[in-house]
Image 1: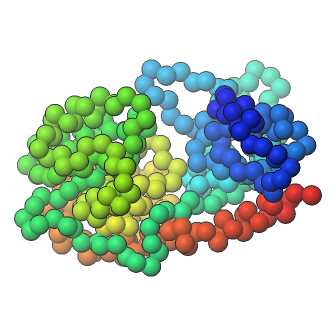
Image 2: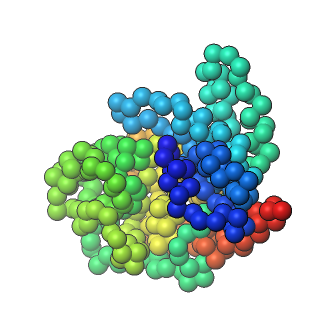
Image 3: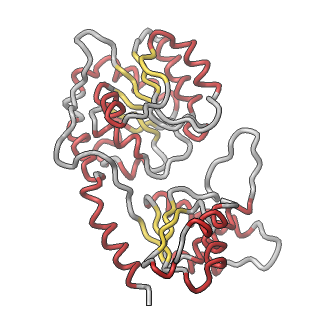
Length: 325
């Protein structure tokens, strides 16, 4: 975030030849526009996360300047898009308290100035909207269910509660297999290192799968996908897993109540760790018969396929280009 504007300023030639600029909140748009001057085309910022509500890693202290970079980036934008209503609401709900930390000259006017330019546009997912992936497990008859983790290996996805739930399930006498997918950008969190030893032969895959086809194949083999996230503004990995036939267990918070149809909330959303364990034990005991029940949920995820979302992006980008004199 500190250096992106300087980097891209030297990478992008002849800005006058472009109809529009699209960036995420991870670049200071105000810095970039100051460097470009009048040559900068109309700018759209896509907030897939924000630094005001993003949780702190253990031992990390808050750098408030990142939050102010989000604010000045939003002010410098011509259009602002959030990846969910949950995310948009969280951002604007947190802005007043964030501004109140200033000892004086609090710029409360920025809230309305940013809100008037803001809207929601869901990201698209890389699966077919018409060809329904296999929604029955690949598992041979008699095999225990395959639980999928397909999130980033980071603290905000809360692997501690995930592996804690699996420990409790084993203590209750239930068994499972485990595929630990997802990317890890720095060092492997200790929870995953410990899990590799604790769950041993139950782990059928450990680490990032670089092939998208093979990744989708793991999802089709999966029976249950679990999230214990503390931060999730949309949830592409969960939507992908559901679309490919996994039964979800998700916390009743963050974006999950928004992206899951209300008719399934009672069954797939949990309130606390105990309820997660109880529902997981039930799914493990009944997953073979429950898969057909959740076929409608799998089909409903087609709403998020790129081919069903792309026309909205076309409209947004055409409107952005029209802003150029």
